[in-house]
Image 1 (spheres, rainbow, N blue to C red):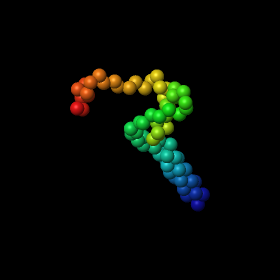
Image 2: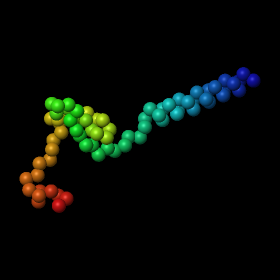
Image 3: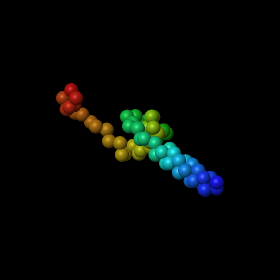
Image 4: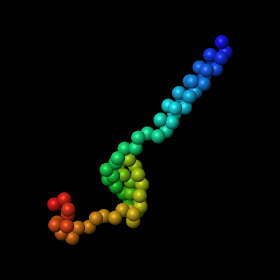
Length: 73
C-alpha cells in the first residue's frame, strides 16, 4: 500500500513543479511604450503602461525636417 502513496506523492510534486514553472514565465506582452518623466529633472523616464525605466539620453526622438520626410504620409 505504501508504494501507491509514494507514487501519488511523486506525481503530485511533479504537477506542482510544472505549474510553478508556467507561472514564473508568463507570456510577454507587447507594449506600445509611452514614456513620461518621473521627476522634475526629466532625466529618467518611465512607461505609463508597463513601468519600464529608461534614461532620457537613451530615448532618441525622430526629428522630421518636413512633412514629406514622413514615410507614412
